[in-house]
Amino acid sequence: MKKPKQHNRIRAALRRNSLASEMWIVILSALAIFGVAFVISGFLLTRQYRKDFEIRASETLINSVAESIRAGVDNYKDISRLIMLNESVMDFMRADRVNAGMANDAKYGIMDVLNVSTNLDSVFIFRTDGAYVSTGRAEYNVHFAQMDSLTWQQPILEARGGAVMFMNANRAIYRKNGEQFLTIARSVYDIYSQDRTGLLLLNVSTKMLEMIVNAQTNPRLCILAQDGTYLTGDENLADYYNPNAVPEVIIHRELREKGRYYMVSSYAMAEIPLIVLCANDAPPAALTPAYIFVLLLLLAAFAVAIFIAAAFVTRRINKPIYDLAQAMEHTKESGWMEKVDLEAPRNEIGTLVNSYNSVIDYLNDLFTQLLENEKSVQRAEMRVLNEQIKPHFLYNSLGTISYMAFEDGAQDVYEALETLSNFYRNFLSKGDREITVRREISIVRDYLSLQKLRYGEIIRDEYDIAEETQDLMMPKLLLQPLVENCIYHGIRPKGEEGVIRISTRLADGEMRIEVYDDGVGMSAEEIARVMAGEAGEDEKEGHSGFGLKGTIDRIRYYCNDPDIVTIESEPGEYTRISFRIPQRVRSAEEEEVTSEARAGGASERKCVGENYVPSNADRR
Image (cartoon, rainbow, N blue to C red):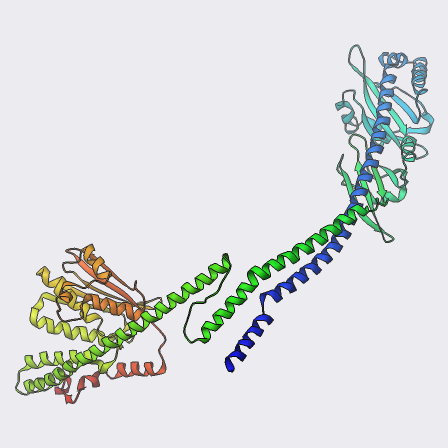
C-alpha cells in the first residue's frame, strides 16, 4: 500500500511543479505586460504623433516666412540695380568733380526709382572720394570711421558688385529714433570701364518683416536679428534665441507651459542676417476610429496566438515530458535501471526517450564490466597473496643462513644474503599495497646489488630523487620490474657497460618518475605494441616476473588514466619510461603509517618475520 501512495505524491509534485503551470503563469504575465505596453505605446504614439505634427506645422510656417523674406529681399536687390543704372546716378559717380546740381540730380534720380517701392527707409551712394548723396539724411547718423575700416569694407569688396546684407549697415549708419533696418550693400562699378566708382547702401525698414509676420495665421511668430535683437512679432519668443544656430537648419525644442506641451522652432537664414522663431501648440487631428480598431485587432490577434502556442506546447511538449518523468520514476523504484516503454512523438521528445534508453543500456553494460573488473582485481590480489607465501619462507630461511655465515666468518656470503634478505623484506612490506618512494628505491638498490654480484660492473645505477618526494606514497614494486626490463632487454643485449638512472620530482601536484637506460632501445613498433597492451615475448612464454606490460597496466589501473605512461626511445641509444602519480590528500591513519615508515626504517631492518638478522651497524 506504500507504493501507490508514493506514486500519488510524485504525481502531485509533478503537477504542482509542472512546466505547464509555469507556462500559464508566463502567458498571463506576458499578456499583462503586453497590455501595459500597449497602453504606454498608445500614449507615446499619440505624443509622437502630436510632436511630428507640430514639427511639420512649424517647418511649413518657417519655410513660408523665409521664402517671403527672400522674395522681398530679392525685390529690393533689383531696386538697388535700377538705382545704379539711373542716368543721373551714373553721371554723379563718373564725374571727376561733383557740384550741388549733380548731387541733386542724383538724389532725384534715386527718388524716381523709389516711387515704385514701399518700406524703403533710405538710400546712400558714396563716391570713392568721399562725396555722397542720400535720402532721409536728417534721420540718420553716419559713422565714417567705421566705413573707412578695411574690416567693414572687405565683405563688400569681395562680393565684386554682388549684394551683401547687414543689419544697420554693419554699425556704420544709425537711425536717430533707434529703429532697426536691413541694409543691402553693393560696390558700384562703371559699366564701361569696370572701374569701381563707389558704394551703394539701400536700407529696408523692418515694416517689411512686420507685414510678412502679420500675413501668417499663427500669431506666435517672431523675427530677430542675427545677434538676437528683437525686430518684430511675438516678443516673448525672443527668450528662446539660440546664438549657436546653424544656418539653413531648423532647430526644434519641446517645452511645457501651464501643463501643455508646445514646440519652439528656430531657423537662421543664410546670407540674410535674420532668425525666424515660431511656437506651435495646435492640437493634431484625433486618432481615427479605424486606427484604434486596428490596434485593438492586433491586441486580440496577439492574445489568440499566445493561447494557440500554449495549447501546442502543452500537448506536444509538457505532456510527453510529464509521461517520461513518471516512467523514469517507475524504473527507479524497480531497483534496477530499466529502459522506459513510452510512446513518444517523433520529434525531440522521442529523441530524448531514445537517448535515455541508450544511456540505460550503456550504464548497465558499464556496471557489468565494472563488476567483472572488480572480480578480476580480487582474483589477481589473491594470486599475489598466494605468491607471497614462498617469499616469506625464503626470507626466513635466508635470515638464518646469513646469521650462520656471519658466525663462520663468511663475510661476503653474509652481506649478499643480508642484501637478499632486505630485498624480500621491502618486497613484502607487511602486505601493504602502497609504500613510500624511499622504500621503493631501497628495493631497487637491493635488487641491483644482487644483480651486480652476477653481472659484475656492467651495470651502473644513478639516482636523482627529489627530497620532497622521498615520503610520498606509490604502488609497491613498480620500479623493480622496470629496472629488470632495463637489464634484460636494454643493457645485457648491448654487451657493454650501461647506466640505469631513476629520477623523481614533484610538479603541479603530481609526482613525475622516470626510468632511463642507455641500452639497445626500442623500435617504434615495439613501443606501439607495449602501449597497446600486448604481452612481450618473455610473458608469452610464461617467464616469471611482472613484465613491462603488467607494470604499465598496474600504473594505468592505479591512476585511472590510460595516458599516464609515456615511452621514449632511440634504437641503439636509450630508452626512457616516464609516468605520473597524482598526489591525493591522505587521511590521518595514512599520515600515521607514513610517519612510522619515516621513523621505522632502522627497526624494520632488524625485525623480519620471526627471525632477527643483525646488521653491520649492530656488529660494530
